[in-house]
Image 1 (tube, rainbow, N blue to C red):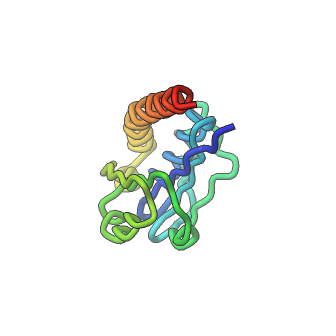
Image 2: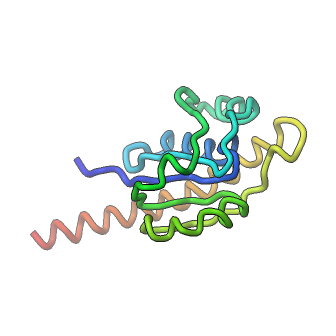
Length: 150
């Protein structure tokens, strides 16, 4: 069995966007990825975040806000930064990841009500669907190349 690619989602508070990324990726493609999330200034998971995930049928058990320092010494295949504030403070991740991605997803905490959380979740899901499709294709190509080399 091949090892799963390690992915870290980063945002400011790790209470909405990065938690969504972690939960979505593990749900959509847990066979290929192992996703984690962290925040620059972690805060508790927002109730609207958990509700939006559950509305889309995504498990929320075990989701917790973590500090970026928890993962400081770990290598990740990809680090996906979901806000400008985290991008400003986490530029040094470039040395500990094979791929650094920046998606500036609007912070749903700045808007009232659950609609902004659903919008953020859909935005992240759409981007992840494309990214996962590319990664699956790259993995198949790599496996086929390995088989022909053998």
